[in-house]
Image: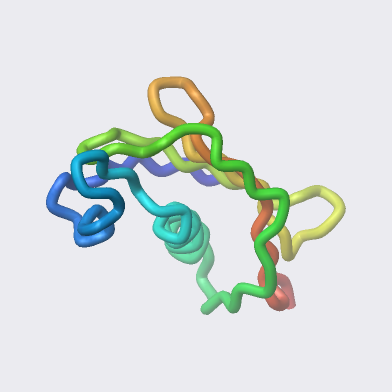
Length: 103
C-alpha cells in the first residue's frame, strides 16, 4: 500500500475561478493527485484505463493537508482502490485501473 501526504497550496491555479469567494479543489485535480501518487510508486510508466466508483464526499480547500492512500486490488492487480483523507475524514475515494501494470 502506498501512502503520501501533501498540502494543496492556496496559490494553486486549480482554485482560480473554482469558485470565486469559495475556492474548492476540482475533482479532476483530486484524481490527478491520485494518479501521480500511484505513478510515483511504480517503476513503469502507467497508462490510465478507467476510473470508477468515485465518491467526492467533502470539499478540499486551499492549504488543506491531505493523505492519499492506494493499494492494488486483490482480484485485479491492474486496479487500485484509493482514498484521499483530510483530518481523518475521507474526502474522495474510488478505483483507478491501469493498462497492464503487471507484465
